[in-house]
Amino acid sequence: MTVRFLFLTFVEMKFSDILGHRAVKDALIDLADHGRIPHAIMLSGPSGIGKTLLARTFAAYVHCTDRRDREPCGQCRSCLQHASFNNPDTHFIYPIVKKDKITLSTDRIEEWKRMLTEYPSMQPEKWLEIIEAGNSRPQIYVNDADYIVQAEAMSNYASDHKFFIIWLPEKMNLQAANKLLKVIEEPTPGTVFILISNEDDKVLPTISSRTQRFNMSPLSREEIEQYLMSRHGMKDYQALELSKLAEGRISKADEIAGFSEEKDEFEALFRDIMRNAYAKKLAMLRILADRCASFGREKLLRFLDYMSRMTRENFIYNMKMPDISYLTRSEEEFSRRFSPFINHGNVEGMMNEIGRASNDIARNANGKIVMYDLFLLIIALLLRKPR
Image 1 (cartoon, rainbow, N blue to C red):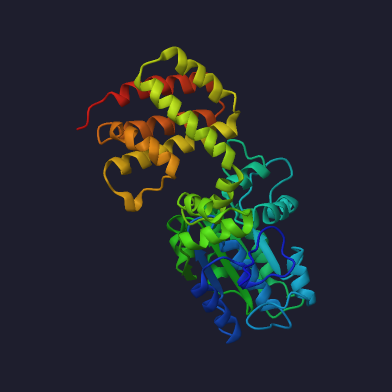
Image 2: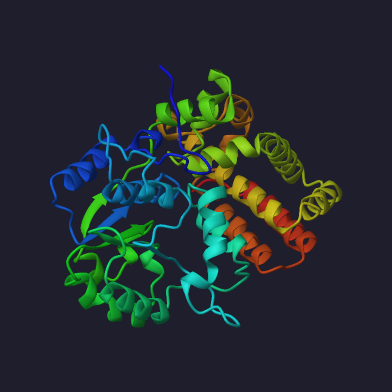
């Protein structure tokens, strides 16, 4: 059987091209087919599992004028508009950083199209990079709420249904959320809100309670394996190993596959750091700190994330809980000997210090100083006895 997955651009937007989530897809299709589309829907679940792809395809399906076999046809005028991000009855709202003349989501529409095209699994950190957010925290502001209220009151262009797809409603500030309460609860006929949330517990309860919720779970290991083989051309044994690390997320699978050589580099570097820290080889640790600093901020943040994961996995391995341990074969070889040094007495301290270093690097602190200080702290933590 040939398996196809949806990756970059949509030539034909199809539910079958979206990995997993069969039950949710069927439920949405049934709502459309039987004319029971609710006025507000929330798709909730971890980032990078395909929620935005599903929201876009659902809107295309509803708008399609020639549905076939529970799929959008991909050929009608409406489907072609969806494929090029230009359907006039579909509005996207997403967090931005206000600056200069940028006050609305639509002021970032070109960046948004790039995000949908290049990063369809919708990693929030990629959006931060694209809009150059720096240390600012993107929000959905009341300006966008005003835009929604005005656009919602206008007549539809070509369809009986008008969609407002709101990405990350948990980023909506209180003023914007309060402005939208009435329109989400009592929209004009044919208006549909789709909220796509990575952290639904942070969505204002008065907003959340007005939606029909669909909880979407991480993908299975088997689905991620299949994806890695189909999308990235991996051998079955490679996909089997790396699927353990993807946490059921397409975005994580893409990241792992895209940085497979980097992962090998990080693994070797982690081993060198821990061995030299245990041996108290300060001169070597200084050299390793300089090497880490040479990565640049983004790569160094990825390495610190790897250090955090390996610390957690070694603690789990030491506690003899293999069912929830996600180590590759080569990582496990090192962990057999190293994991006893990560225990109840130091795991919390290790995680806290790595997290603190990550925060410092994110704020553009000096990489050499931050990493060398971290390595000195690791020396003390490795020698701490279990409680």
